Image (tube, rainbow, N blue to C red; front, side, top):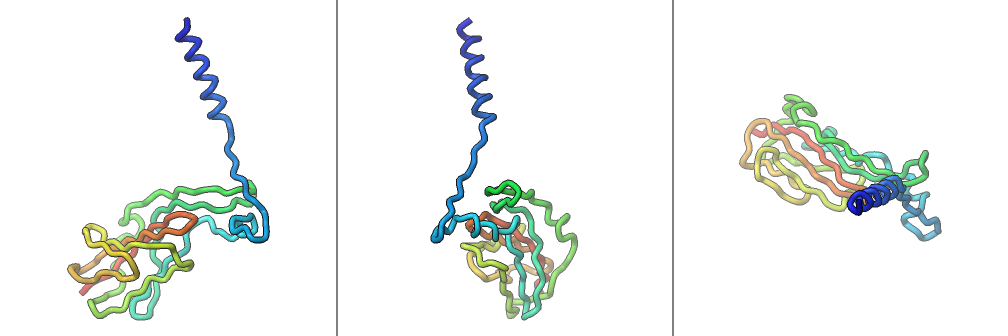
Length: 163
C-alpha cells in the first residue's frame, strides 16, 4: 500500500515538473548586450562559409549545427539542432577545385567565429586556424570545418582535388 502511494506521489510530481514551462527572461536596457533588440538580429542558422582558392570563391556545404536565435513569434530565444547528413548525400562526387602545395586557400565566414578547426575527413590530420593542410593527400579530399560562435556550433564540408 505504501509503495503504491509513493509511486502515485512520484507520478504526480513528475507530471507537474514535466508540464511546467521554463521561460528565459530577456532584460531590456541601453547597455545590455542580451537585450531583445540585439538578439533579433541573430539568424536561425550559422553564417555561410566561403572557401577562396587562389582568389576564386565557392560556398562550403553546411552539415549540421546547433544554433540559438530570437523567435519573433514566441518573443523568446529558441534553439535548433540540425541533423548531420552523410558527406556523399551532401556533396556527392563533386571534386572541387584542383590545388597543390602552392595554392592559396582562405576560409571566409560571413561572421567571424570565436574559434574553428579544420579536419581532413577519413584522416587524423587536424589543425586549428585558417590553414587547410594540403600535404599527405592526393586526389579528391574532403575537408570538414567545425566553427563555434556564441549562438552555437556549425559544421561545413567542402572537397578539393589535390595534385
